[in-house]
Length: 217
Image (tube, rainbow, N blue to C red; front, side):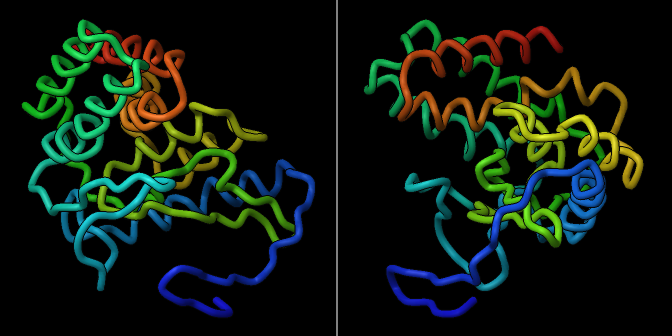
């Protein structure tokens, strides 16, 4: 970090480079180390920070919670539904279906013995910079979450060498059986965020992900 103020942050410039399979393999393995750093609880913001955090320009809660499902449904998906409804991106019936999925998630249907991971929180391809030295991540919404959420967001918008990244991750720290089936569950958050600000196509995708989440049960 070169400079910081109340309304700015200046970072060292990262010169772009062409994505490579070698860099993708290294990134997948390195991401497991970030996740393994852990967090005090699901929802916990980074040490030294209190209050809401941000995804893009939108605030979202960061309150420590005992279980992942209760955190994810209440603090990551539900806050964006009224905004998406008001924007006309989500119908009332669609919102009801998403709330049904949230109730299932909050009730613990997908809780497991995974400890809180230190997740990036906004891991789409635009926040993955490929440099000559390898991948550099920017613009995090870091909190204690489930590691599958980062991987699902990375999958949502695509990424160069995505399957190599995922395979390298799984080799370094194997994922639980059925993780690919749970991708729609972990995409509820980014889809809700995008439905709040980027139009009805994301509202429809959110409803589809909610239907697929309900089908998992």
